[in-house]
Structures are given as structure tokens and as C-alpha cells.
Amino acid sequence: MAHGPGRSDPQILKRLELFDALYEAQHRRAFGLAYLLIQDVQEAEDVVQEAFLTAWRAGPRLDPESAMSRAWLLAIVRNRAIDLLRSRSKHPVRTLNDAGDPKSSSDVPVEAERAMEAKAVSQMLAGLAPEQRQVLDLAYFSGLTHTQIASQLGLPLGTVKGRLRLALDHLRVVLSTQTGPTLPA
Amino acid sequence: MSGPRRWPALLRIAGGFRRAIPIRRSAPHTPAHGEAAALYALGMLEGEELSVFEQHLQNCRQCLQLVDLDCEMMAQLVTFVPDGDPPPGFKSRLTARVAMELAAEERAPSLRRTTVGFPGGVRWAGSLAATVCVMLWVGSMFGQQMTLRQVLVSVPMHGEVGSGSSVVIHRSGAAEVELRGLGAPPPGALYAVWLANSDGEYTLLGTYAEGDGTCPLGRSVLGGTLVVTLEPGPARSAPTSEPLLAATIGSP
Image 1 (spheres, each protein chain N blue to C red):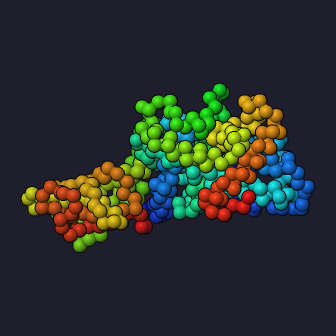
Image 2: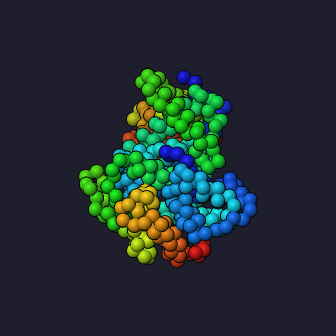
Image 3: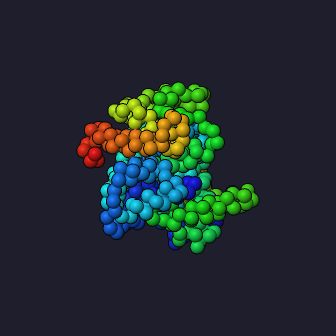
């Protein structure tokens, strides 16, 4: 077997390095997000694997040091998880309040710790008015459409839209107090 | 991703949207548009609603700014999500998939030039690449194994002896050290292969009783420095002699 590097080998090695760096930096966050949304270890793995493969295909444009790349990867994870949730014909609607009640502890070894951390997200959203938090939770973490939210809560569609707008406006204020005034309200 | 439904938000996060939809002229902005902007950032608009809002977005500075801020916030919100450990063996399974992707790229060179997935890339190419992967997966197991055994890269090891030695990384992600020309060690002594990290810590990867041979490395060595030493007896937690050979993996 010839072992001499081919003409593209340095590029491939560099690409592997970048990918490995992104993996090491983001795989726990990515899996945490996928599991938070899906609540199934195997399906969360599938989602995260597909997201990283998408990142791999991005090739040398991927910069593991850049916040943009990290946000992009996590956005892919969330979008794929939401797609999966929506593809289930009848998936039980789960909100952040349920994150501390795992279905089974046998397949989720770090459940307790994760649930505690999930509550940090929950507390951050607690700064919103209850009705705003409810619609944002269903939209962002449960992947429901505005029509589904309206149906589930028995609200007019316009009310749901209005609450979501207000929720995002208020959340921006909450986030800016936690992370600095980078996002104007 | 099931369709273009959430691509706009994704593009916004990556900062590519402003280039994609330039402001043409001002358009009347209503509270309903503000609500649609929230739905848009959350990836909830579909079909005609999506088309109508994107049309409006081309002409409304206020909506564009709202979408910009909302998407930025969505990206920030994700960072508050708790970390989680994937199941054991996840990285190995992912590495195997990456290896198959690499093989697919080499078998279909025309596809390799196509950028996939990252904002600004060609959207349909993801499906095409996935199709190629599926085709590869349903190929013969023999073919797959041969592909995974193919050498991805060979990094020469440097030293005063054994100059023909190298570190070989296969497409499967497996790595091995090929020792050449070191000669047989003294009786009782062994050649030891170590992985050194940037903190100066060593991990023993394997030992050899011969100066010519192949030492499989049971872990990823990317980004590390491999060192070969001659140890007077069974290797301990760190080298006891000066390196005979060394190679840094990841600095082509």
C-alpha cells in the first residue's frame, strides 16, 4: 500500500483538524440542545450527527473559533430537531418545565445534572410574562407552529402572533441584562 | 432540513441575509409585519405567508432590522442550553460517516467542488451528497472496508534513526505508527509510542519489541505529537529516555 500523501492530503488533514476542533468545542452543547428538544438519546444522536456532517461538508469555510460557526451549527441542530418533532404525527408537547422529569434514567446517565441546567434556561425565560413565556416555549423548544399553538391553547391566531412578538421583545431585554447591552430592545 | 422553511433564519444567523435581500425602497410597516418578523425568525412561516413576508422584507427596513435582532437573539438563546454527553462511541460513528463522505467526494469529483450546507452554499447539493452516501452505504461491505482502510495521510517521523518511520491515518479515522529501520531493541527493552499534548503530558499508545513493524493506535492523534522512545523495560506513565522519533500530527 502506498503511503505517500496525495496532492490533496494537506487540505484534507487541515479540514479534519478544523472539524475535530469544532467537534470538541461543540459536541456537548449540540447534544444537550438536541436532547432538550427531542428527549430521546438515539434520535438526539442522529440529529447531532447529521448536523456535524453538514458542518463537514462546509469544508474549509468552517472556522471552529468563530461564534458564527458555532451558532450556525447549533441552529442546524435545532432546526433538524424541530423537523423531527414536527414529523412525528402526534408527539407529546413538552415544555421546559418537563425537562426535569426524564422518562427513564437508565438511558440518560446525566439526567439529573442536565435537568438542573435546563432550569437555568427556564429561569431566564421566567423574566417574561407567563403568557409570553408559554407561547415562546411552545414555539422555540417544542417546535409547534403558530397554528398549533393557537389550537392547543385555544387562542385566536392573532393573539399568539402578538404574544410571540412581545415575548421576543421582552426576551431581548432579559438577555441584554444577562450578557451586556449588545442587543437593543 | 425539510425545506426552505427555516433557511432564512439560518442565513440571518450567519449574517448572510442582508446580502441576499437588499433594501430596494421603503414600504409601509404595520404591527402585523412586526409579528410576522417574529414568526420568521422562529422559523414558523411557511408557504404563502413566507413568500409574502419575504417580499415585504425586501422593502422594509424596520422588518429587516427586527429579523436581524430576533435571529441574533435566537442564536444567543441557544447558547443558554445545557451541555450533554452523547452516548459512548458517538465520535467513532461520526468519524466513520465522515470517512464515507470523503470517499464519496473522491468518487464523485464533480460534487466535491460543490459547496454544501454552509450559508451561501448550494442548497440542493446536500441532498445530492446524501444520495451519494446512501449509494455508498448500500455498496458491498468489502468495498466499504477497503475504503475505510485507505490511507488518508502519511506523516513522516523525524529523528536520527528510523528515518523511514511514519504515522499513517486511514479514512476510517484509525491511525498507526509504522516503524522502519530502528533495529531490534536490546534484550528486555521495548520501543514505546507516546502521544504528547500541549501541556507536556504523555499517554502511552503502544510498545514494540521490534524496530520494524506497525503499531495500531487506539485513538485519534490529530493535533498531538507522537513520540517514540526506547524504554529499558515495560513502559511506565512517562518516557524515561530521549525521543528517538517524533511527528506532530496536524501541521502539514
